[in-house]
Image (tube, rainbow, N blue to C red):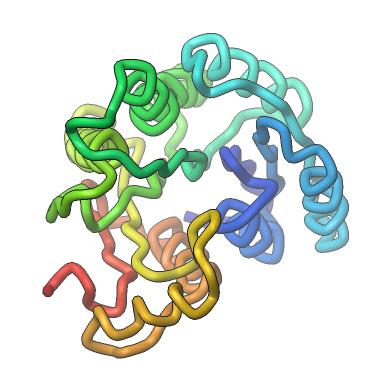
Length: 243
């Protein structure tokens, strides 16, 4: 795919991994529609930063806990502001602790709406507006989606669903739309996690170090440029999924 001149929607694109992916896209000449929920200051900074690379950028606030409504709002805005969207990055997610005994129905529904149902209906809207043009979807999944460990029950199962969804929709949407996933490892500290605790996670992978959001963004650019990869989950974990 030729990136320069293309248009992307990046959910959760105002902060963290989504912001870095948006930055790399803008550097590559891609116009970016930044979805956000409540990161008002950050989204204004992101749009200004992306525009400084000479591309068009816009933002739209939408609540992904209402997936069907949010998908329509995001693509209505993106299409009006920037035209047809040929890249969808499903980056927005929530990550909350909870085992079987302390996971409520509300916890479950919140994770599944935002982490799994929203990417599904966003992809549906993406494919509808794309028509017979080619495009790419990249889902930010989690290595624990394929190798679960206890501690984040609703989150992990929702990400496992997103892994399956990635592989399913790659088959359904080919040959015109490629669908892939990126599974980050120790990239950024979780909310409330100290830097010391985060760095201790380096000991859990064969490379004995943590990564950066740029590692994920570079993987996304690689997948977008490829014309012969679909249905794959690229682990960017330092090998943590092997343990």
